[in-house]
Length: 112
Length: 114
Image: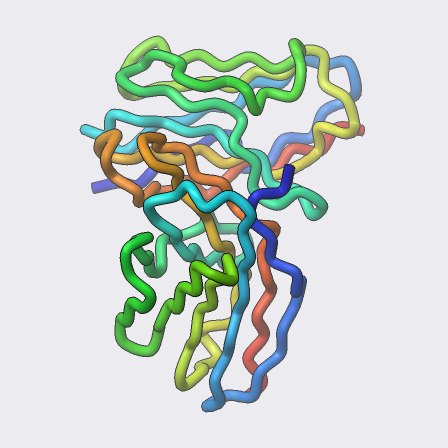
């Protein structure tokens, strides 16, 4: 049961443009969604989160949008920079549970 | 403060051998998580501990896998006997409290079983 889906395994974006990474989910019982960023040979690092009671959260160049009716969230990176090239995972945390359920990841490549 | 420490960073072993992966969480963190990353399934949670007690091991693939946390600063994940399909990157993560949603990951152990 893949509760969190990232349907695009890879994405290439020109430097300076907007990168949009997408995530779909099936189970609506959650309190947070999180995005993690992973560089090669390193562990994932937390990037940004969004609470289930919000529809947008912004942190610098990174914005998360949550569409509960569509069970969809997206991460926007504006402007994209070469250092943003990494694998991005979305993850869901259910109410009353500290487990995170991760998607399969999207490899973002920023083209200089 | 040092982050989550995992050892070894790389492990190559033959099918049938026992493999032990090690993790030292961030000091003061109460929860510890073991994940496995594969291309097909992404990051899967195998097991997690809170205050050294296993809380959920439903992600452990089969009886060949076992995990222990004898104290707050050390955990092991053991595979016995290992099989080629166990080849993956195994991550350990820790978090400060049960209410924390942010988990801090170690660098991972790349396991290759031939």
